[in-house]
Image (cartoon, rainbow, N blue to C red; front, side, top):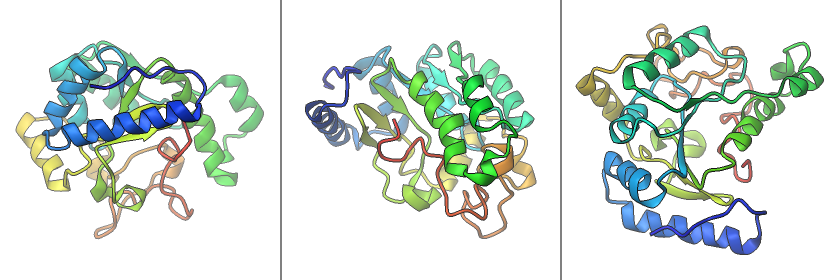
Amino acid sequence: MAKDLSDSPQSPSLLRLTRATAAELQRRTGFLPAADLLSMLLTEVFPGRIALVSSFGAESAVLLHMVARIDRATPVIFLDSGRLFGETLRYRDALADRLGLTDLRSPAPRAEDLAREDPDHLLFRRDPDRCCALRKVEPLQRALGGFRAWITGRKAYQGGQRTALPRVEADGTKIKVNPLADWRRDDIEDYFLQHELPRHPLEADGYLSIGCMPCTDRVALGEDVRAGRWRGFAKSECGIHLPGAL
């Protein structure tokens, strides 16, 4: 179904091919349940050439569980920014062990880059966009270098730039898949209950979208799920999903 995409420079022809492939996949798989879409992508369309990028945050166990049931050897990329909650790191290890994931990768920012640009660990205050680029976008660029497609846990109900989220889209020369794009919060809750999945330990304390510790706040009743991210800044995304980031 999907044509082979190389990691050569982003020529206009390659970008057009990627967009056409994404449109074809969206058309041919848009009706499939999330688990069936994942199965098709992992076993038929991009076998060995697709990775799941997971934050191991409050809702991440749903996709991780789906992927593990299809192929536990699927590469799972967890961006270790160096500023994460200890609870997230421990949840990552416990959940990966419980699900039997065998290819968990935790790319991190380069030490020399941090020493040059964030020696005092306060870059998040001076320039949060650059901090995210240094600690998340650039490590993900390296980690996805050998893959043709990647899977995200984004959902339209999370709001902001995610409101009109397609299930399959072009991201530069790669295909990006959002299997849960049309899921509601209730769907997530039902899946957790049905499969008895463990919750992130910070969720019970009001953290509904969990990223780096300095830039994550509790969410008040009635606020959007991601309202606690970069509170006080005109920012709602870390950058890995912005056009042209990868």
